[in-house]
Amino acid sequence: MTTMAQHQSVGSAAPDDDDDEWFAGVREQYDGVADAYDLADRTPVKLVVMGPSVLGALRSELRRSTLAGTTGVDLACGTGFLTRLLAADGARVIGIDISPQMIERARANRHERIEYRVGDVYQLDAAQLRASTAEGFDFVVAGFLFNYATRPEQIETLTRQALALLRPGGVVVALLPNPDLPIIAEDTPATLRYGLSAAMDLPVRDGAPRRVTYWRPDGTRIVTVEHTHWSRDVYTREMTRGGATVEWHHCQPAVADPAADEFWRDYVAAPQHDIAVLRPVAAVSSQAA
Image (cartoon, rainbow, N blue to C red; front, side):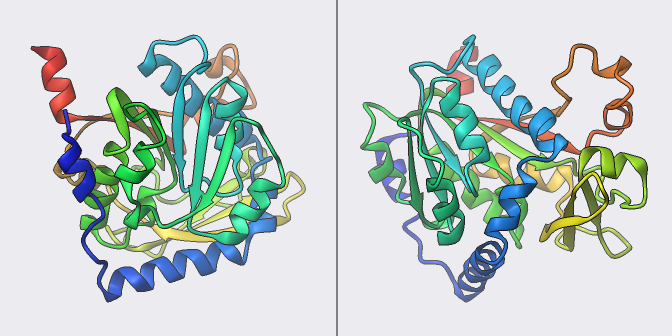
């Protein structure tokens, strides 16, 4: 189990100039697309795949039928898509995002069990945030957080930050692009069905920019954002260095029989998103003992 002394040390190192540039770039990108990104939250891939996959993973890992009575943090919460879903299932959630415009949009949809804050996850004061609970949070959700790291070691730091927020027995659920599917062509029926495409310059390599576009069913673009491509090996290595055990799962649509569903057939054959379940190594070791 991570000690309180370790919790207090997380985030204490000052970011270097590259990190400052990274923070500013992410903030500027999302401040500029907050309104459009809110529309992207209504695409089928978010409503039927991403949201239910995160919620299902949390219920499974916490061994609960609902999240009623739990506390959590939604890191990189954006306009609050996942935050609202978690609160609707009964959790009390703090949503944190680097973009003031994203948080402003999120706050427009008030919920009694949600508190939104503007903040850099990379420089988060985990001990202070934990102090708002008895012993830490039941869960941390990181929806498209780790894929904005521009250097591998940033993934390690973000992992430590997320783990430091947990109570004993808590879990981190990270939503990520499927690292094995870096390119999703935009000129296919599946793109219009699910509402998402992704492009990269070839050859595909770790650390390269990846451009994701959300689409309306009529083929008009909603918004394009850019993040960083990392292979599954890099994610796993750096998350492990950050003190976590890592379990990967493909996201699947929340329908009765995904494999037999004609609409979702292409997604099931090539899942666009993954869930990474992270637990502190010490906690897993003590459970095994």
